[in-house]
Amino acid sequence: MAIAAARRRLWRGIRTAAAASGADAGADAPLLARLVAEPEFRVKATMEEASSSAPHRDAAFWEPLAAALLRASSLGKAHLVLEWKLEKLLKEGVHNHSCEPYSTIIRFCGETRNAALAMRVFEGVEAQGIQLNTGIFNALINAFLSVGDLLAAVTLYETMEGMEDCKPDSATYDAFISAFSRIGSGDAMMSWYLAAKNAEFIPSIQTFESLIVGLVRLNRLDDDEVVFEEMISFEIKPNFTILEAQLEVLSRTKEANRVKRFIKKFSDGNWELNKATVGRLTRLCLDGCEVDQMEQLLALIQTGVDLSSVTRLHSGIIRFYASTDRLPDMENAICRMFDDGMTFMCPEDVEAVICSYFRQKDFDRLDMFLNRIRSLYRLTRSTYDILVAGFRRFDLHQPLDSTIKDMREAGFA
Image 1 (cartoon, helix red, strand yellow):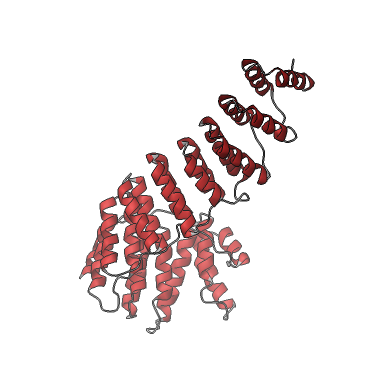
Image 2 (cartoon, one colour):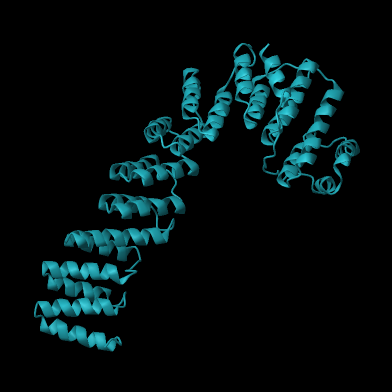
């Protein structure tokens, strides 16, 4: 029997290892303090005393305690709590119990990589004659995967396929996809994804996270793009982990069209932008010097998300238009920045605008620009030098004299 084969593999040499798990805030604080303070040989007795002294205590009170002990790195005591619960369930000997409490114990075993205890729990369920279900098989598969025993996990999967009431479900496939993503086996990961699709299961956000993170880590960027598009087709919004993976792809490829399409997806899908995502997108747009991307991103984000990035985008757009002498676009960008309550943050931006006006010999508009920023921005020595040099070059004596006077009043020789 397949289960027997998995059992033989387990007892031939599984080694367990610890892995931290999140603690539950619902733990009984005084009882938890006792368990932490007492030696391990007292753990089971303390749990029994706690259970007997409060007959109406929630039967699941042990769960947050086990989670809290794991968070406190008390792995041995957490295992003793799990063993106490297993022994209590087996001692009750009620055959009409559901698999749920046993499945919960096995799930904890998966988190702590204790496949040996997980198998003991499963054997206890079989011995009790309790009706098995998909959930308990999934929990045991995760326990085997946590210790890297892929053959035993696959054996259990094959067993499920032959059992009417324990057929694999989407969580079964997710477990394998996640496991192969962690170990970096791209072909196996994609095979399990295709198997889930063939079984007509709708992938979850966790499925796509495992796939996308795994593919990006393996630098299989074409496959990543296909999977990401499939996620969009299911109208699933990417979470932060997926977005970070996609931004990593954009950083590696540095393709302008990819960045543009990615920003458009944010707009079309109404995805939430956070500060970190905005910051990385801003760097990509500025590094690529693509003004269309900068305009697209600026229109998408709200000032409150990341003021620094918004300011940098305004500056990048203005400097691009200034470098290409697109004066109407440059002036519109400047007005937009002022309307957003911002001003120039560095002299290089102001000087880029001034140089553009000089190149186009549009001195009237230069004068209007200087008048406008006079109350908003204090000119630096380097900016005055550029103005003086420009006015001298074009023999503009009146603005030259005025600029020299302003320069002296500002404290520059």
